[in-house]
Length: 248
Length: 228
Image (cartoon, rainbow over all chains, first blue to last red; front, side, top):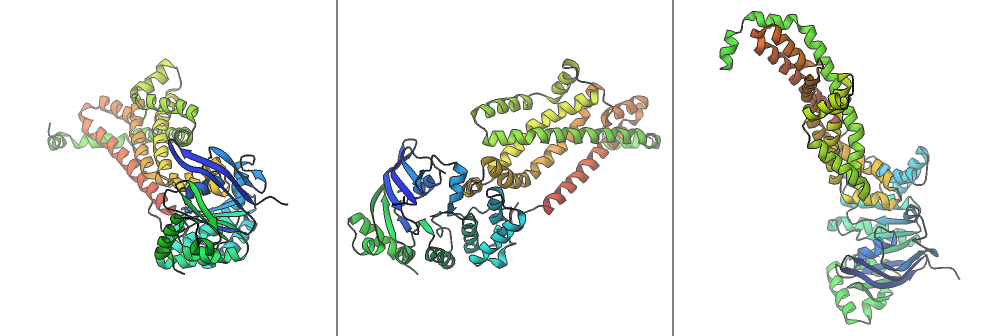
């Protein structure tokens, strides 16, 4: 039997006095798409940030492909785990293309030509061939986020983390980003997604994980959690979210 | 006395005197320019890393750099220059003046760069690290290119201050512009207004043109669509 791609084992995390995660455990197999939902402050983003070590955990362990992430070189871990941010965080002084080539050149040691070729291809894959030479400030929110996705994908990650990728977008721009994410899921990328987009969860997720107050309340396939949740808290939260963000 | 009165009293001969001594002024100006250039350069080479340390350094590196900056910024430039030349015996005087002005400028430039670095959104560093860049690479390729653009206005200020403060080198006998103005004034005491006006005009033209040049450079490297 092979190891799961991601094994989150009894993770505890706190900022000073404030406990954020209280014993979170879950696994992800290859090609899984898991959606993390929960009220704000429930620890969803912190959970993601623990996986690529932007935040350190206090207790428990996280393994990627059988290796504890604390046994891996931190930059090597991050190369294998792509991250997409709520606020895009595109490098403001670089064009869309250069945003993608930077990691290829500095982390994967690509030469200039190979890096440009791969980045151009990656941008085309997210529908931004025309915008390759635009600077972030010249792009719409949806385009920025697609560059953010291309930047992470170019590193050939084993796992993609999405931290509320559509929360900063105008409603009419959400669709184009979700479309790219759906395609990615269809292609078999392993994805852990924090989002309020319940339409995406229903269509693309293999599992939905409901986090509340630092604890994993419940997890299961979307139909189970939406139709027949075990806990009242889950039912109440999901029905509220579906009313707000049911769309698509 | 009222300046217009002074102007009226001053003979045309005093302007002629200044004109005849123009080469003397030019040599002093050239010295001031060299002093400015080398002290700004020293200030940059030392001040930029110091600014990076103040923004990103560990407890110990910050613990060394920060107090040094505080002490240098808290010391009058005349004291620094006198210490360098008379107490530490650095010579010739031009080198002592460059060193003193450079160290002082480094202490101020470090604050310009620290402020600019800290103004770059933390998400930029985070995104760079998330791609797998080392901290040093992230600073070099993501944070600094943005911070340097933002430090231009502060740098212009610093340049203007350093250029004018080269006149302090007068205190250790460097024959820069102000020293030469004093010399000329002592030869022809009626020409006080003309001599010092000419000197200040030269300082002004230098600061004005160089600052316009820096602004043009700033425009050329501005991030398209950006607000910096």
